[in-house]
Length: 311
Image (tube, rainbow, N blue to C red):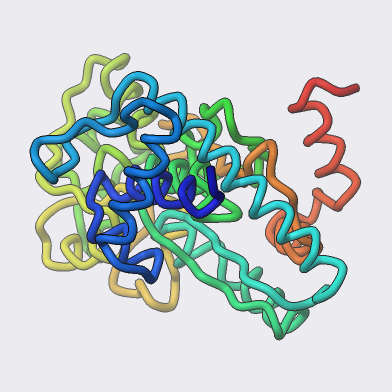
């Protein structure tokens, strides 16, 4: 059994059983990947993947166990490399952050700017996606750090640190009747067409629950993953926007009126998530503290120990 064989089966699984895509990601040939998987299966005397001709169609029961172990090996190899890099290249490397558009656009810029100034030799990659995609990328080791609301904190493989709390606001064009509502209520909000986040994004389940529990049926006419898109359609007069407070910019959005909704909805929490078994480089600790100053290396390590069952 060879390490690269485990890497091949791991990547094939990550690429949805697409050998061509796996070969491209691994910078090798498709026949080479197929051959090494075949050799590993012969050595283990079992099939890892189900096949229909030359096409992979699924994962066998023993294959599921092998893929899980292979993923663990890949992560530990990454950790070992990080240890080496930490002591030989203290201020160089790559930091990959997975987050939602809202966090990337409105929360991260100041921390990213400070990070680049402090660690000029560290390359930053930002991957945007849904909270589910953010969580998956951290779990799979594609991203070092995930920043998202709700879903990420529910994964047992991740250590999630509460970063900050936020709430929502409604945005309407200047002169809109809702701007005169005092107080603003769920019923008044629901009496207008609403434009808000897609159901998979940014605390939407909490918003839906509030409407449901109040027996109010909102008229959601359009959803989007991007607050800027929501505000664009609000400006066109297509509805009232319901967005994160942080997504309203007084200068950029001077054509819109912001209506506070924090009395209508519970606060949501944005979390910083990392794998419980990950080795963090020094600059990764640094980034976390820049984003959430209350966490220094000691408090993060204490949280790691607690998540692993150590006092």
